[in-house]
Image (cartoon, one colour):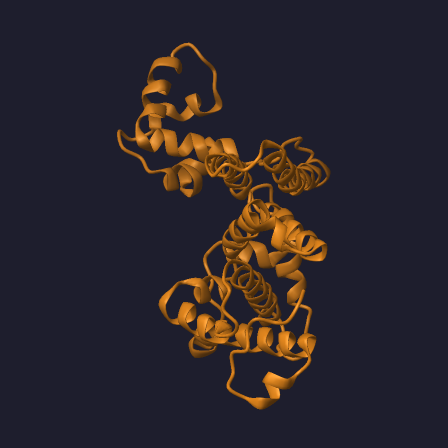
Length: 292
């Protein structure tokens, strides 16, 4: 990968350290910096959905792959026990992807630790790193796809494989990342063509990225088919779309017209819907459980 471009700490030891050791120490320090807000908080950041990931119980509307990592972390007790090992995994992975991005798009030698300090203080990255949710992987997917689509010529084969794995598992960790990835492929192709890149190069880079996207879709389909006997990539996707369409208005107007002649499941409880209802009520409220 060449000489490490993150000579961040003003220390002769780090300046003279071999590349691999230098990189390891730098990434470890940057990972710990990202976890400072959690350390100050005294506990990882959690969301109501976090408990469903930690439970380990397969749920059609949660990523089984992230559940395996989150639930499995509870049984790890090496340096930090339990849930902290999950956060350390997220911090190290985030640090390394950001490091690759920094090294790829800039010509600056050094300052990586300072960059991590800045983004920890002035952005929300440290919050999402310390959050027991797969949300941080959307950003990692975005950075990884950018590097492959726009800077593939600057990457080694090992780095490309690593970034493809990041893309693949980022998509499997959260269902919404699949349509985002597809949109990014389209936008990336358009941007490459607008900048005059040859069609063959564009196709090659898109095929490489698309391979990771298709693999992720296959993994998601397989887990749903095996665990839930539901042959779909995203089990709850259509339910979420329906709830938001009803809240926004078009869905409610559609049901008003069609429920008189159709026998949709939601039509059985349509008369109980108030004139204005939120998507959250439909999905998670007492009415939502009945209508789902």
